[in-house]
Length: 122
Image (cartoon, rainbow, N blue to C red; front, side):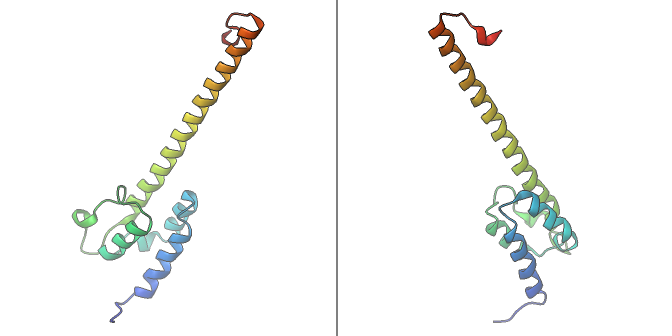
């Protein structure tokens, strides 16, 4: 099997990235620390990272964005990070709404038991 030049370095960077994949902030910091590398990766490395991060939807097919020097992953990884932030914010909003609904329902039950009329809404 013939190894291509830089293969060892590519693996080091990719494995380092995989260590951070569960923590979006750490992943963002890691990419920023290795920005020069991620600004120009070859198509095969891009596709490997895409599969390993299980981010096929966000890390889109790079063939159309490919340049002679390689693929710039920085924008795609920033999008991946932002998607995680947006998802987290959406989940927090949903949790807040659920808690508000639970509180309102509990308040109404208390009002009914005590014979009051909508004191929790005042």
